[in-house]
Length: 598
Image (cartoon, rainbow, N blue to C red; front, side, top):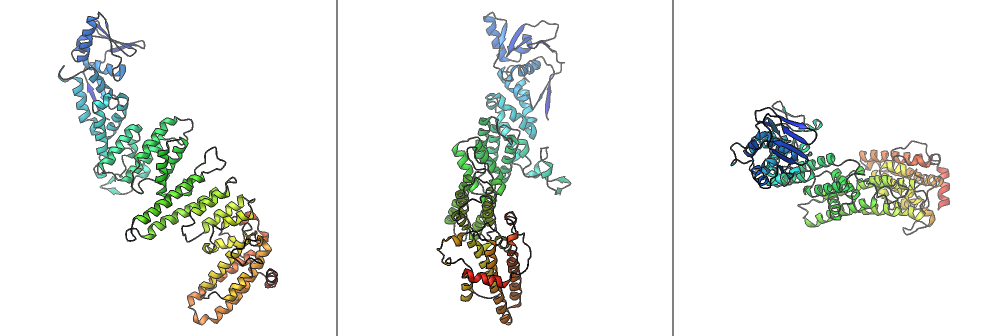
């Protein structure tokens, strides 16, 4: 820290009680100056020789026959006045970043100009500021922070503007030119070494600026953005660091107006460039804006910004607590609104640019990422026993238009909802299962689904059917009328029509029913094996191998179902990857069951 010593005589100021200060000399004092609640007993000559204001005040007191001078409005109060008084007595006084602003404003108040005496206090302080303080990174920040207590004096004396210029110009410099000390988290330091010195990171200035009050911080960041030398990503990192430092984890019981003002300021400082602000920061700001009841404009802006970056979200980011007035745990309505904003923005981007400029796969990829996150989010909120089916389905349907390669995520969410809400009706069970495309389930998910007693029979049949089709396709075979009739025969009586809504079709599958279904498909499997042998010479060897592997998987799937009656409801809710091997189903009982179904 820079400092400057003034004067050469020892300090002779003494204290008597709490409110009296005097100079201990043989010469009696001849003037009393009241500064706030402190009385200073001083001598006229040294003070009047350097302060034009005191000269005028003494002249007025002589006319009024008063022995005391009152200057209660001096910036910095008694402490700042004492620094000026000691300078007048040529006593030793030390100026530094913490007291220089107070001394400068007090000297201005006392009118300690060069016209009164050469080498006066104002001149000396200005030299110290220019040659010392404003050249130092950390001292400039300290002085800038202290200026807030001396407004409007510090603003009118251009101390604030000089500090802003010093701080922002240094922050905007090329990191390779930084040769002063700064505060930085050692965990973030890069490992690269240049000339045996650690490489200065691009955001080296971020943590030091967190010391500033939000008003001053706003001016610093705004000026840095205006200069245009600092990347939007670095500014985004700076804003995140400031919020982390300045906003406590729990704002309950805190000053709401203070934090509401801070959130407002930070929101409008956010860079507009894409990917310049972390998604976690945007979510944190939105959560706080809701908790603090910030203005609708701020909340709408944050929702809009979040809607642009939903593909960067994680499930944890979206688990926002619902208001206390709600019965649900998480605010699913808010997430629904964010997803809507995202999809609207994506559609707008598709309409605004040509295919050459905006390839289709770019935006589709971000939509798929978002849909996967929502699948995971639904699986978490589904654990809430108070979550209405309509809210679950509405959010799931919002992303149903996004074509994603796998539906394992939405299946897991559906299964979790069915587990936590066993009392829903058949029609509700049917409605929620419509969200899933059985053709897009992985082999592991299919193994899990066919053992899941919470699923309607319709879904179990579809899973078994599409797995058989998948296995047949991989072996080079094709669909035949006989195969279609055989699969239709597995369905409940009168349920082959796509518009059927009978109880048999939508009822939850029972263990013995699924066992019979497996038997019928086992018959199809044997017939496919015979066809495979007949066409072996015509089919590429690699395809044959793939078909056999696929049919081994189906054999495992079917044999596992034989054990369903021994598997509890809770067991079926585990990960789709948890499957076991079992023996083949006896064909005689399956054939008997098939005739009873047909």
